[in-house]
Image (cartoon, rainbow, N blue to C red; front, side):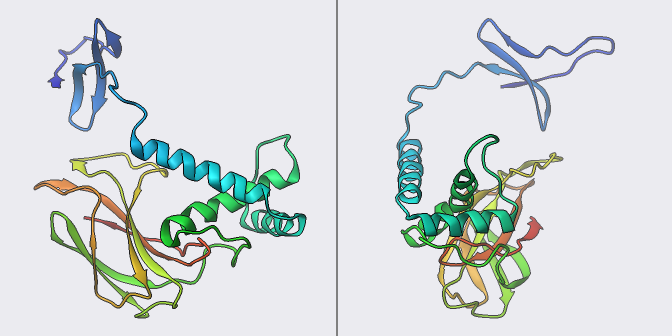
Length: 218
């Protein structure tokens, strides 16, 4: 990958030409060889597909009363399904909003919804870097509710300025239930000198509901 500096009056090139891709990154205009995936069917992608399929099968196997509970939950939480679809499609969307989180945290799907999010969580007082792989969170109350876990979402770090989007952030770490403060958490992406990233810290209950997140930029 190379950074390109254009002269005044020259329009930047974008798109792919002859196996090269012209794009814009945090460092400026770049050119790179066009990547061709060797194995797009990765283990993690296939694992997630199986999880989504299992969640979908679990929801539609619920009885009518249980699906109605999720439909009411979705309505109260402002979650909508695909336009023109049946009412339980919104309930399915509401189920997915909690079910995937709950399964990743505790290994099972919740048959009934919990409180409408956000759930009551903790106040995160600080998040500090310990080393390139670890951050330390201090929070109150300590510990949180017995069925709650502390988690962090981490955006991919990078040098300099970045436009952060609402969809940024990957789940980096879940704690055990009811952790004590302070708590050290491993990060998903390493931080190198001069690089920075964003972290969203909150708690999640056993039904997949999440608290209001606290944002930190490190």
